[in-house]
Image (cartoon, rainbow, N blue to C red; front, side, top):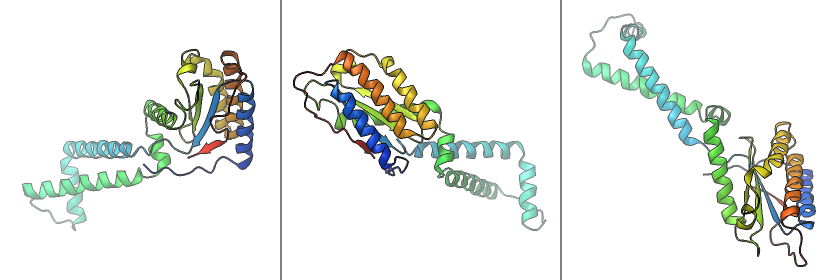
Length: 229
């Protein structure tokens, strides 16, 4: 799946988030990774599903009102009544359904429409799955004490996820991150993704400092910078 690099995060946002990560890690042995992306999935299957549903509905309408559509075709052909054979019926029907399906599919290549027609629970699952995949690649077991945590933001879905490494997950329940998530999403909706991520990082830092205070040896094992994909 090809994902486009976003353009919603400014250089100032990068600096803001990176500074927040550095400050949070100054008081904890936890390591925070921040990632932001435009879209977590292309939802191409949603376009296929909706195109098929629309074609099926069109078939149902034709089945209910066959005389109307036959008369419509006759008028298009110049008003001459035509004795339709079974093969002609089927050919016309397949052309009609194919056109409906193709037209719907082409219309659904417009991403905003495709996203609007994607059920919320599907977007939630795919953003979560993408966050976990990125966590496994770049964060999981990458620190000595397994104290890495990923903050992931997917802009177009207005969804964010926090995925924590083994040591953190064993002590911090997912709902503890609730305030950080609310602060992030509220700021994103108001067009301030950088401020939202920085505030979420600050609140995550408070939780990490409580459960994983900074020790005498605290190497910086993961990047502080905001990563765009």
